[in-house]
Image (tube, rainbow, N blue to C red; front, top):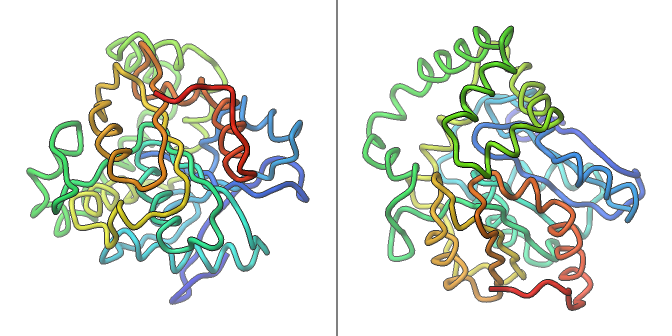
Length: 294
């Protein structure tokens, strides 16, 4: 899809074309197909049309560094207009979490509910919090913008080099991950999903670098100003984005619930896909759900 300044956004759709739209925003790294198989199958059953979007610098999307994270919403609104989505829900995984929250801030009349799975927390201002992997990016924040192009090329080159042994590389990564993540990566469809997403980078992978830059800046909005209902899932053994970050964000969001995933780490949200879908749709319809929030 063409957006501002002639740039392009790549996207993929899953589920019935006349289903209720849910925008799924991938993690860091990731791309448009990073939607769990359980969610795709459930979408067919309940009539949901999932749309996954490549952030600029990955997949089919033109590389572009925004001044602030919230500026991505201008391009995203063009995509939603062209797809004819007047009302929708949004789900953000990990690095997609801040972008999902930004949709609620920028499009409060359009976005009916938000789901966040292990989302990244702000690092700047009075809503900022320390810790987690993003805190490492904060330390090197001044160096990231001038080196974003060579870093993106290096990261893309690494992915291309590892692609012939992609399954084995993910097995090695899983071996050093917490038990919950090892269980996720033991599933063949999950490994294939990650490999598919990273295989069309063309040797360029700037999106993760740009995400790191934007996460360490002011996001351009406050959590306190996100009025849309937010449902937040977080593993209590998350080694990348600590549970404390999820608790911190939920306390600041005006209308939010936290669902803790006992014993699960950063990718635990993949195992909660059906629950996420049910809960987000219930929030859209203003209906209660059976699951008890923590």
